[in-house]
Length: 531
Image (cartoon, rainbow, N blue to C red; front, top):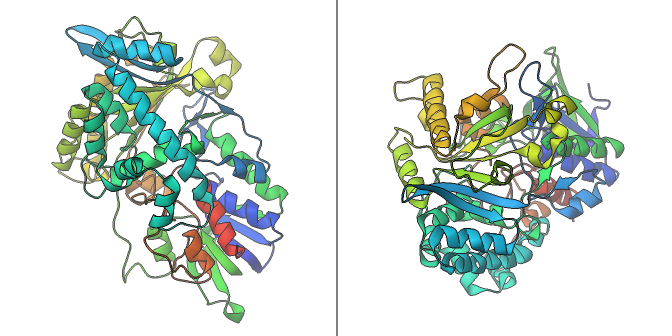
């Protein structure tokens, strides 16, 4: 139970953003209580032994890091080691009856040669270089603003200082830019995928949700690089929890917050009500409450869900965790599997294939050829495997499927399990088409003799982590600006307001939320401190 009846700040939810907020506020000298309903902190950024009897700790949900700013790592004294990936991606394809593909990485000249082998000229490579030079410039100008007070649209546009880049990313559907700049269908598809991670949209969606997703996937660290966290995602949140505790924050697990009164406590302070793992009820007062939960959960805690609940949202991803006895051989024998799976391995993600899969999902049937991307954490970081497994050549493999929205699993006359199994079989069949041997032949078995393969649907994420509709971002991502000036208080300036002065949002539902970044936690802490 909590040690006190009153706090400067109570944080609801122990995911990575809540831990960041707790650490910053405690380091500022505030009395801080964090309440987490699960038996552990970390939220979706955890490492787990997913397969009984097998000494492998997988990043079960979130699995790569790009958006965590270096200055948060420094400020909080985090002991983290990011591993760089030599290869960005490999995309296999069969052309003119020949198994080939596009390997991006390993140096500029090697990438140039890969483009030339695939397309027959340097045109697409040069377009690729120009396009990602533009996104790197954008990253260098936009990423630092994410931990500053929220700029207006005009302020951010001036800071970007490149009208062509602004139009391409902030104003026009991403598909228009891709089709103007690239001619090859496979190359177009590789570019588009960064706009579809956890986001159910067409390349030409007029809402620009695909653009917003793309932006956050190319600006991380001011470079757009995606790093492998050594020790797995749990190493990130364990370091954050340790930092918060060192600063004096109380982190209490097994306590579910059940209600929140913005001014219902003594002296007009906020009151947070909770139950512990034995069902005992309790309450604490707070000057500020920082909510690291979805807008839907916040509305329920405030008792507002029956009035004007947030818009329904849904996730659109199929997550498959695997442990292999060895990496599979590829049909494209010119590429080493250790290179191909070290970065992002794209399957059925040509530009036309992605659009077809989207339209089939909209129609309710689900994609016949599910697009997906895979990567092998243990190639960059074998520490997540026991020495025995690593020595024997075992490898992890993560598959992230696109265009599998929650609606597919929640109706249509088929059970969730039936839909899950059908889509899993179809996704693995697409992978097998690119391999010289079935992936099933490479799977390890657990202590009970079962294949080491775990599947998580959007509905699983909703049940396990309370992500609304299984949406990994708590909802559609926002562009990192506000439309007009006039933000008066700290909560509005930092994009963490809720309509209640004492209640701030510090999770992915905040402006500039989404991904494993700690940015909403940092920004909510700054607002709570009146900065």
